[in-house]
Length: 86
Image 1 (cartoon, rainbow, N blue to C red):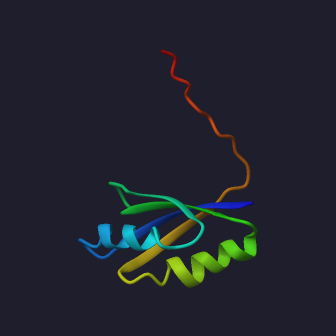
Image 2 (cartoon, one colour):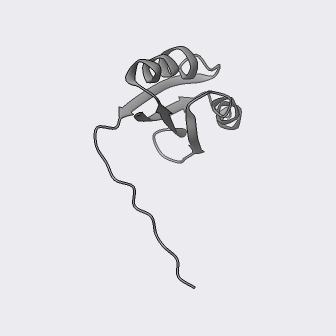
């Protein structure tokens, strides 16, 4: 599995529209509107690097009103889950 986080800049006021379009893209598993230097962060989980590259290049970067992207490909990591006790 290949995983990447993509930071997106959108046209002013287009954040919600781009977020909705990201939800239609296969392999986008999460996306959030954020404050800061970027407008949206999205998580992509694809079966391999070829598919990951394809999704980023031909799907995400071509969404109308996306001005720029920054891609961070995951090399290694861990998932930490907080367990709530009741």
